[in-house]
Amino acid sequence: MPVRLLRFSEINLAAWDACVAGARQVVPYAHSWWLAATAGRWEALADVDATTGRYLSVWPLPVQRRLSGRQVYQPPFTQQLGPITSAPATSGMNMNQLVALGARRYARFYTQLNDATSPPETALFTVQSRQTYHLDLSKPYDQLRAGYCADYRRRLRRHEAAASPLRVVELPEAEPLLHLFRQTQGPAAGLRPRHYARLRRLVGELRNRDLLEARAVFHPETGALLAGALLVTYRTRLIYLFAAASPEGKKVAAPLLILDEAIRRHAGTPGLTLDFEGGMLPAIARFFANFGAVPVPYAALSFHQRPWYLKWIR
Image (cartoon, rainbow, N blue to C red):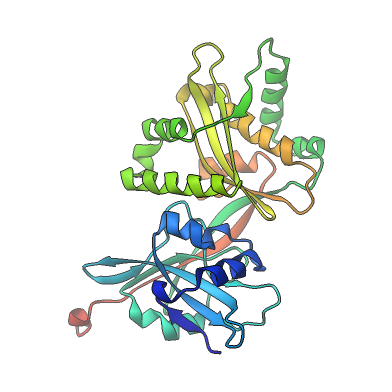
């Protein structure tokens, strides 16, 4: 059956999630419950088996309406999407099919592909190179720690030798972390109340599925939250989804302690990769690289069609 462009009402969500769960690409962001939390509704390209109704390949296209027309966009807290293909499938979904089926339908288009998908060779899209950072956690912790930069190893030794070292503990509720982010990084990140509402929905979905790890460091005397992080465990990925730190927390290296504790707990897990989910800003890239992580590229695609009443202008 040829690839179809589906409206949200036409999507079989059970078949969709079965395809994503068994896909060669490890993309938790493409699950229906993740998209429902961060985007609400979406359209999609889908290759559907005519006999069984099974989805062989899917490509989520979150859509929003603007005055200039309908736009495909990348939802918040959703690093990568793009084509996703079930492991046994031989689906031929490709960029040219998106051009033929979807490009003329949208006024604007922006999507970030997953790191297992190569960008298209077509003049329709503008292709931007992006990167995240990955760390292979299959190695023993001692070996991973030896790969940290010298300053990180020195800070950890100093912390371990302290009379009352800071402790990384479980964070029962995410709200204090969201509040800390709003006070610190929030304004620069441009997050608005609707973004935090989406993150709350996503946290709830992740907790319901036992996929969330919430960790924090508190001040030993005042009890103030110094730093915290939300990590997602999904198949072969541990994803550093969201984090915040106070100025004091940064001074005492609380973010370093949280990530080191996560690496220590998951070290030696065959096939597991820590995805730091970032690295476009130089300072953030250095922070991740100092753990021994390596850059992993992925592509962002975009195009913008002029409205019909402007197309006559040369």
